[in-house]
Image 1 (tube, rainbow, N blue to C red):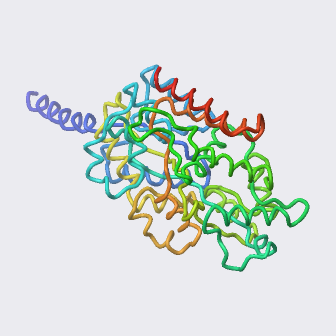
Image 2: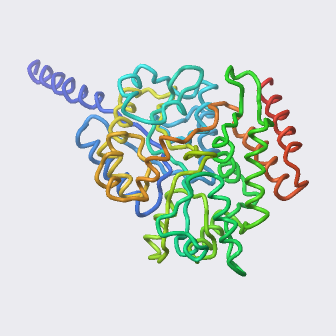
Image 3: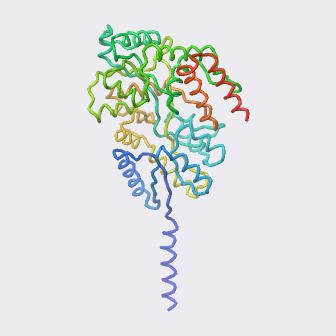
Length: 404
């Protein structure tokens, strides 16, 4: 009897310890596209096979309400272990202590990935770069040819770009030089900021104390944007602009890698040109954003969560994910060297633009600052038509946000 009891205790200890050693982590992510989700699930399955003591519970979010669900999860104390976050959300959650600091872990990989600065708030790193995003200039070669340009022409600077857009706009009825966005929230500022940064304008002084949105360089950027809008602009939502471009009605648009995916999936026939954002003399800066993976501060499985993030963002898995999503923007520099990217000229344009792209400030108030910038651009394009005054009003609003 004593031997049986001893054996029972021993078995319970062995199997009980095994059960206790396993852990479940929850990952909330946004990739629900049926062409991408199976790849996400396959990577999770492989992670679980390589780490049999860790189970991953995958939860899908949508961009329509995902942010709200994340906020509620933090407020209710029911946040997951791992979160996919847009770059402009990181400071918003880090400032309230919702994200685990990962500065020490990031140091060992800091040189191998792009995008760390977007995950750094007040000198501390709170997330790992996964998939980045930028905008490049797309052009219709057939319209450029009709406008009198040689087959290898791409605008080398802003002046050549403006002249080419105007010439295309003069080709005839229902042909436009430039695709200009309507007052579409969270989109318009991403189209204006590449012009803004390319002129050398800054949102804040070098010491980060004052907003300088209403500088002369900023006014020059908005003036150029307005000239294109007023003189040869096809004005619509982002989707509407892309539809018209693919239908051969627009010469130039600023867009992301999703346009390449549309062309492929919809079997569109267009003589496509992709090039870097033109600057005053040389290629200019574009907008930089991205998707990041973060461990929540409330997680009781931080080591397992960090291991999952490292697995998902590995160079080989980034290439795999980009192939599935047709993304051109891995954060891993090693992944960027893969033949998948090197063999495609349009993907190479994105890789090169990422290196010359700039992101908004990592600030908890950025979404409100973004709104102030969008309102200034809207006023210049669709309201007063003025340049300096809307920028001045936006500068004052942003300074107030920084002081509160």
